[in-house]
Length: 115
Image 1 (cartoon, rainbow, N blue to C red):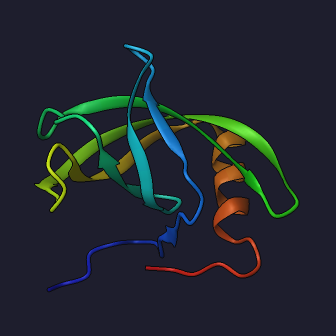
Image 2: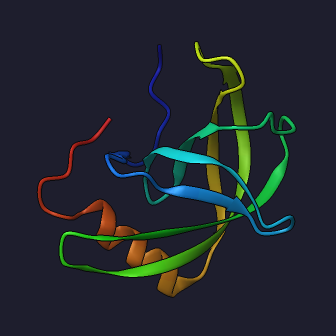
């Protein structure tokens, strides 16, 4: 498999719930996250090759808690081995500079494990 990621993805060991800002409904939890993309364990099937506006909160290990809003483009989706759950990969296409700085700080926290 060719690795096409531009940035290392940090494994999300804590539960990071993701909300669709248009519906205010939970769509799943982050599996891993980088400055340029994320993998989501979706609890609902998401439209393929679509654009979404997501909201989630990052903090921990001495980093202040901040709620981020990101625009994403779904690149792929696969059903998981658990019925009713789906793996989905996203590329970040829009993020405020302050949110991007916080995301970078979260990715670079000491003790980070990358996928």
